[in-house]
Image (tube, rainbow, N blue to C red):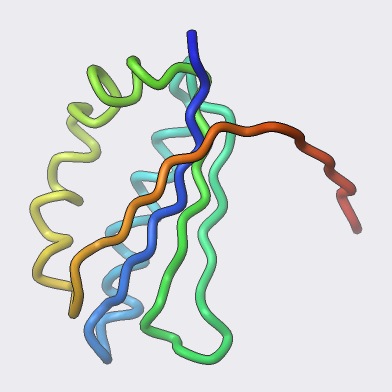
Length: 105
């Protein structure tokens, strides 16, 4: 298994911010139950509310592309997404070299 981390930038149409989250959040909720899922964080730009970033990490690159992207809970999101976006989705893939965490309360 080779892990994969990706950063996904979605620029939604103005006024579609709530609708985007309505479609994205159930996908994120379902992903966390997958055996190769490690983590995801959904961000919204402080200065441009139409810009969202997903930071996603999976334990197995092949599993992500061959299995996870074909999951039924992703299909409807992938079908709806182009109608919500004002620019093409940007996806960049990374290999993690180091991870440090400090969880605050």
